[in-house]
Length: 69
Image (cartoon, rainbow, N blue to C red; front, side, top):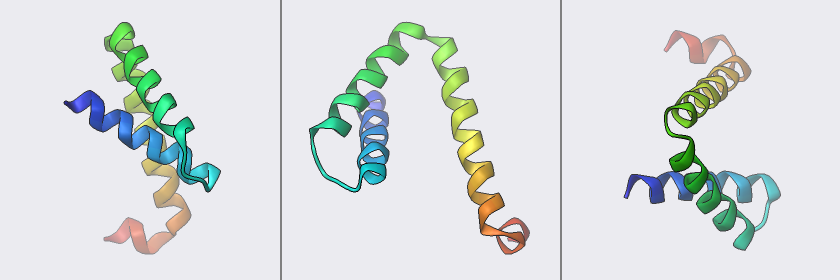
C-alpha cells in the first residue's frame, strides 16, 4: 500500500516537471518502487537524503520568512 502511494508521488513529480499528463510518470513511479524493494535499506537512505535535499532547497528558495515560521 505504501509502495503504491510512493510510486504515485514519484509519478506526479515526473509529470509536473514535464508539464504533461501521461504514462511516463506512472511507469517511472512503478519502476522506482520496484527498485526500492530490491535495494532495501540503501533505498531508504537514498530516498531520505533526496527528500531532505528537496526540503532544504524549497526552504532556501522561499527566503527568510519560511525559515522563521
